[in-house]
Length: 349
Image 1: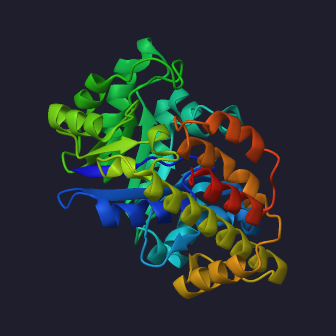
Image 2: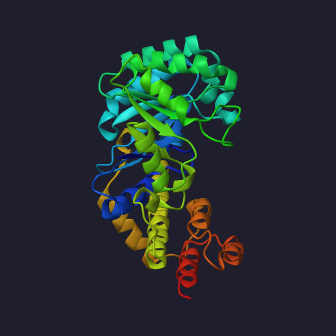
């Protein structure tokens, strides 16, 4: 079964993908494979101020995730993906256009789900983007439509778009639903059965929170892959089909935290040196592990990544007795070493 870690802004960072793949390589089923995506990146931001947004593109040696972008301007979309395709294709296994995100900040630049409002225009953009790529395959992520009344039009749109895509990932909820209600997996199956390009892969997405659910959907619908998003936050073991023991969870949390801090320091060095961002995208394994060792010897510093890590940390410990009270205590901590020590203590009882 092909399992997919859904791209999420602020979530599918390089450290998160790294810890997820490390655990999958140790405990995942041999019959399964795992595909990961980057966070989605504003292509206009990449062209205007690449040093600010290129951290979304950071990869690990040999990782080769699919790079997801958003934007509503065809000219800048074309310019951006051509630059990525020409200069950075060795770091990625594909490039994908986001037409599903319901965020207002994304939609106000005619990106994400807003692109579904003018399907004729968007279809032309998809064609032009796909035809402009020389090295990377092109894929699309979308939804089941704007609302229930739009599903037939969205079905036709996605089937037409398949002519220009190697893969389409479909979230089975409409824009009106957002993240609420049931995902329409039958709609995704209709797309699969009516593709204009039968070679185009179809990935099903929406509401899966366990490995068993992913297996059920895969068997029931026969999709080319099943995508998990929210259910994987703070639970990288979800792709392995088993629960983690407390000791294993502690080790996973600490590893994820260490990687997050090393990542931030790598990016800060890049910003301070104002290096050419073309030399930035792949974090060397020796730098990563060396930096972690340095941090463990001198942990008395504060980093933005410590604050950002809370969204993962609180999901990791969700449901463990005493976690609610412990979260309140952790909220006051901004020091890397203090948070690390507090995690150690929490799992000692």
